[in-house]
Image (tube, rainbow, N blue to C red; front, top):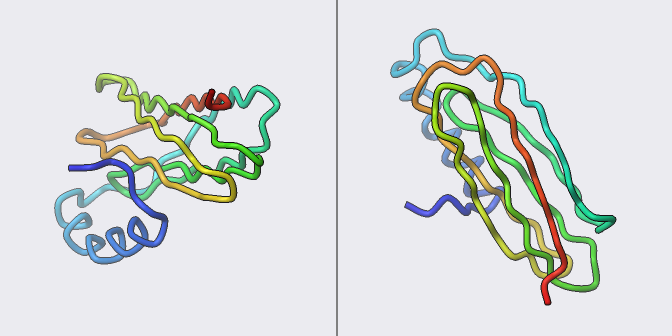
Amino acid sequence: MSTLLTLSGLLLMLSQAGTAAASAYPNASAFPIELEQQLHELDVGVEAGSSENMAWIRLANAEPRSVHCAATFRNGPEIARTRQTTIEPGQTTVLSDAVHRPVLKMRIRVECNPTS
């Protein structure tokens, strides 16, 4: 399963999975996110969020060139997972990570560099 989703695809998936997620995680709720950004002076917008059993970041490239971004999702008991993408100028993308255990806080480290 691909972890690279469009924002509209992610929102649609979350709205459709709302009832199933609530029954699978009866005490689940969105969890706080600690975001660390290493953007190297690039004009990249970063927004993070969570919904029951998923954390996501939206990356918007406002640079005149492509950028390569990597996001590492770390929640403590689970192994850290890294998602990577190249974003073309003017484009936006979403990287996400599903969690399989209760989360107290998700730490996401985002690093973006210009592509060569």
